[in-house]
Image 1 (cartoon, rainbow, N blue to C red):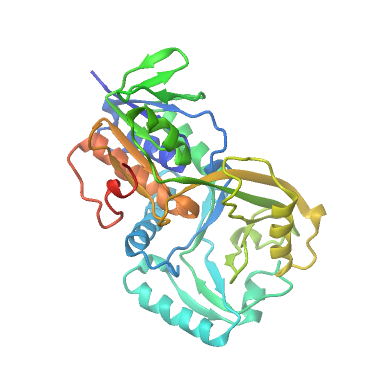
Image 2: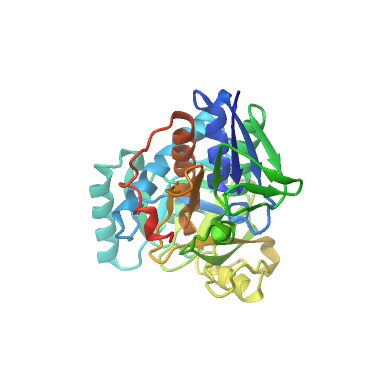
Length: 370
């Protein structure tokens, strides 16, 4: 009799877990059901940069998770045959306006390359060099180029992973569910029993585990980005992505599409309404580097809700007092980088069992759950 697994949440962690449960050896012995109503999901509203190596964050566990997450994505892109519209290693340019800061960043890149060969080639670029690689810019700044950096479309990634898993052992149900006080799923048609349940519902984890008497140190954060129509250069599909100092990410996609974002709004909670203030913030940031952009260039706005913990670190694993429940949350703005690895780790423990030690990636779950 096949094992029955449920996943609550179809974002980056849930979709990745579903994909690996369908593709890892032994996954054919599992029937997977994924529940997601789609409302507010951060991944569907996300497009981002995969380039964690030069982060200023001092949390070494997070850095290890993000570094290995970037490697996981490189492998996943080949394994799942992701198109370049979804994931492409275009390289990343991280800018600095101060000459000393630029030099220090270049030295840091060389140091971290020793333990992170997936960074690829590292180059110090002048403003003119940056302009040559990113002709969309009118006001380029000098920066450090890392060839292993990539751009990713979160919504398209999730759709591709779920579509592939559905061809094997996954059933997707577009509905909101809850848990009873024993950890069973309550769906539209009543109580549902599963052998294991992965709860990958971002900031909604708090409400889901409340019937179990569990409190979660997670808060919602609203994020908004804009998509713009820009001149379609022949080289645009291969243009590097830009991480400007103190500004929003600048992400060229192919076919004349540019994405800028995202904002970080800690006060709006679960509100999914795009605001003129956030749009102006994003457009103003983009105009710092491409001064020809106006509101007329904006073709689309997306809004989603991220999950943050007090120390800005993600957590994931099996609940001690409810061993059939596994949770993951708190990925914040790095979800597209860390989510696929977390999904693979959770899928692996469901297939192969055991009590894996993930302490190199996270603090104990009790740090965030009480």
